Length: 206
Image 1 (cartoon, rainbow, N blue to C red):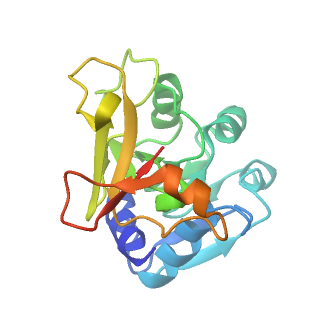
Image 2 (cartoon, rainbow, N blue to C red):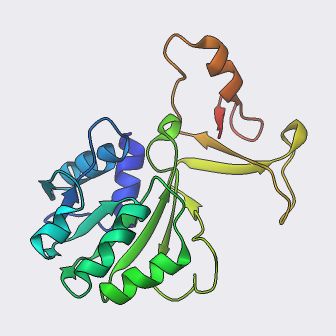
């Protein structure tokens, strides 16, 4: 958690004085990013019921909005031109390139961050930042590069690296969870030895 909180803070631009809109229930891992990233960097945490309050208020001014693509997509038409934010961080679902374009049109100068991850390895394992039109024309935004001290592999049968363009399974290595509480069978199935890392290291099968 400590490793990835600090890594994602840098990726999203959360720093001392940043105001972060936190609308995710503490039952979900996204709240770990919203809460601890903000507090660990000296930012201001604005806790709200959910991100839909932006529409109810008629807008929002601050640093970072953390949200789910489908929810923010429904909200966006109501608040176009009424939001001032440094970054919008998406997680929890696939992010379409069309929504990225809509967000940039609605919030001039905003940084769009696509965070991808699993609870087993923290809320975000990888991230991608779009500051330009580099995602134009693609059906979905890329999941990007791993955070610091995290490694990702696309592997095929026998844990062999899949060639570029060939489908495989994504494995996450480095700083990952210890396993499932009182589920040694499931832990053994999903957390496997990392043949590419130092002795004793493990990776998570996504």
